[in-house]
Length: 510
Ligand code: GLU
Image (tube, rainbow, N blue to C red):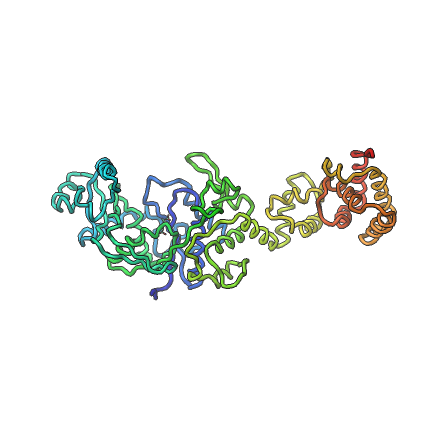
């Protein structure tokens, strides 16, 4: 077991925007680090220059800033184990590849892409799958089959080569995983992965292990897709004689239907983002939507992601980051994939929107009121925000849901006219105006005058009259309690609106 101070890392490759599965991985690392008073590191793994995408690193940093997931060390803030970008550490990996060769854990391989392809085809013709491993390496051009002198001669003459890991034949390699228990694989099934490439750069496998060691990482918490690589990593630690970290491979984030990994296409198909922030792909020019731009609150995204794979001991669903930190445990992470649930994501968003300080909701509404060239006092805006927020999930819905508090309707819903504006309605509406003019403009007084003394006393249809009044004031049959709305709009504005509806809709035939 680990007894060193906890240090974990999130180590994305800057190959595009950060998938929310990656955000969840980072979140679990963060919670684990905080819980153990440890350190959380952001390391950029950019050794594969062919997959490098400009802007991806900045995107990653910005996404975590938005989400409130803070790192203790990393590419954007430095730290005493830097540099934290692998391309800036380029020169230090070579010596480790050399060490492995000298100690019989790795070898030089000269096979050209064409030669590898030819070998693959040869195997396919015999209905076999080619893998560069302990059973096939003798057929290939490498320092084992050719001998080290010939290999040195080729290297001296400038022939390109890679360095491959040399798995011992037929040994069982066991990965102790904190989520999955012991996972054992036989070395015969594992291919001699390339550790160092002909372009002078290490591959992910070598750089990842060297950096985890040099950065004194104690726990590697990462996606399940890396489990097949874990035996190689365990062997590399053994080969170097280094203490291996603890491993925890997180379950996949699955499509809402549960069959397969959640992809960007699922998001497009079902209308939800799979990235924290909007992303403009510099190559294709394509834009992918982001949680931030769709109006999600970072707290909602964090809470939703925390529960996709981790189960608290109680049925509590709403957690602050501090509560998550206190309750999170790797032991309660599921082995099975977690199905993404769009409705649940919206539910979290709705809940967190309700928790925002009223002044923040009012700020958002105020901005939209201005955008629509309407004016209102701050206290009125706050009143509207307080009355209406429970109907709102996303900030963008504020204006549409509340516009009639600020501007009179310019049209009336035809279906509602048909359903509610019965013959004689202009007379009832004229009566409403009359009551507004003559009765004290107070909720209770108006309620009594309209609902009891006029509607009930005359045996009139409450629904038809109140909904027609709503139609006149709002334009459609939605909104809060009718008389509350009337009180907020004020006497004159209500009268104006009702009069306008009478004039516009007019009397309808029997
Ligand atoms: N660079 C790897 C990635 O992009 C990191 C995997 C790991 O955490 O070991 O996911």
